[in-house]
Image (cartoon, rainbow, N blue to C red):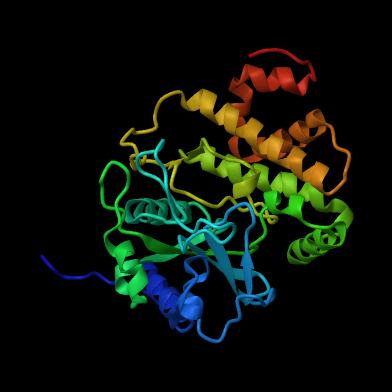
Length: 321
């Protein structure tokens, strides 16, 4: 019947999860001044590390701790580091550093819903909320109507995503060895493994995640160590190619699929190589690649069998594709 809302088990469960999080969401502007530190629940202290975490390499995101292995990423609340809290890009016509537009938020939400159909292992986008839905101090009223360089409306909003770890690989380069070791220890507690096994286990988990994506029609052309958490979660979905979902630029994303999957595997191995260097574990590229492909082929063996370049790399020969 037209206009009739059909309640499915999945829809009810989604509502329950959102309402559970809304119990935390009595938001206010931090000190009524600093845009880069807005939208924290009342009662949480921005400077308490056990309550909140700000990724150094992803300055427009912060994370709110729900429990040890459940964090809510809040994306789009202004730049947390440096002097400029919002910067309108001249080179990129639809980019404002520090803010996150409604169109991108909707796409991340849609990609997340498609991921949920194949696994519950990936970070889940819970929902988004427009700045115009918040009561902000008058000096921030301009955000409700702010536009990109090409004069399109931004409709800035906050995106809420559930993750198991707030720490990204890239963050490690700014930390002391003692803090790095603590982050690895926490990660190993979640996986119930010895810290000596961390890197190999991480490699296998990331390989499994990317193999699942590729087998089901997803490709991440922008995978790098700043959007992979220390529990091998891939975050930031706005530019991930997904079935029946156009990319932000309007393209379908169905060109050069074979080659782009190959490239993403190399990006993933490179990220693991960065991780090994940051935690001072000597690891050869070919060793990482071999471990990665061994796990990848368990889910997507057809692609490995057909790809001659993978075969060449596994033979440990250096060459130009």
